[in-house]
Length: 120
Image (tube, rainbow, N blue to C red; front, side, top):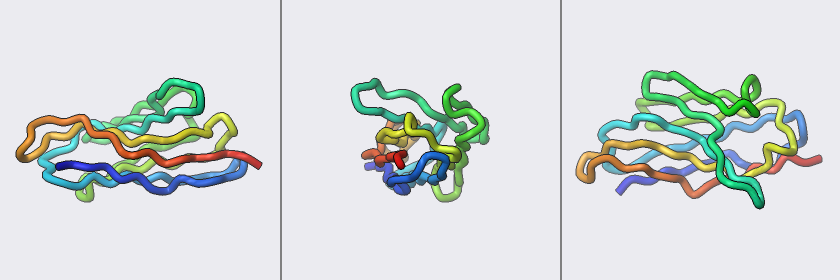
């Protein structure tokens, strides 16, 4: 069994910062791409940022220059540093990972989500 556990969400004022973390655990052989998605009320889930095993990153246009993804491969953890937050960044943020497991082959795994609210 493999699971992702996110942390770091909360309430922040516009212009503020938050750092999300997502730790993978279980029978993991290797984690390929790790990513952050978000889903705002009444909207579809969208890709925010992704980071490949070698560190290559991609970002949605709406967060470029404000959000930074990073990962610690030794700890199977991915981070999302969010700066200059805007009310429109309010959403549930989900961690996603493409994982080669030891016993169960290749899996796409989702975290449970963490709520980020940007409001004054």
